[in-house]
Length: 225
Ligand code: NI
Ligand code: MN
Image 1 (tube, helix red, strand yellow):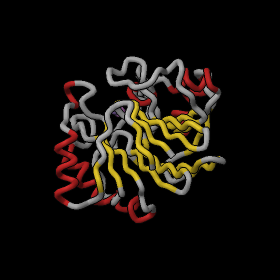
Image 2 (cartoon, helix red, strand yellow):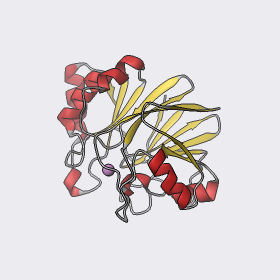
Image 3 (cartoon, protein in one colour):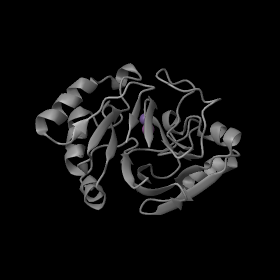
């Protein structure tokens, strides 16, 4: 399986000819590493309705036919805009032939660009080829991340480090201590000045505490998992 960082909090997971997008904010994303008009998709996970996460999900769904998977309120909104959808909610699991997705909490908001508040944001554990990837969405640190680490032997955790709207570096290190992922990848930083952060500082802190391996990915960079 291949994990590609598309910039900000956007990732592509490729498995046996299927393309799974997570938070595909590409149009208007200064760090975007893919063209929303060309990227292939068979499933689109969205953590919450903020524009830098919902992003191009609806237009990519309309072009490719890939369903947008999100909590009930966000899925409903996407369906009204003409997207195919699969809904669920925190605590639930969606099973597809090529992956399994479990919804977990995130402490944040979930309002669309036009001001509609769409329930609770979420994070996900995506299971592909027997490997578990945690995408934290936008969130603060919370103690129940320990429960996620207890339930899954995580192969990868994608964690925001930019601060201001989410965890910063030190809280992301605390999160990784609870999640205990084999590989941790920083995201949601340095897209704009307000969330500037140094991924090398995060990498050094993970290394000095001996809690897994930090893999800093440049936008467009791929990782074989
Ligand atoms: Ni957000
Ligand atoms: Mn965000």
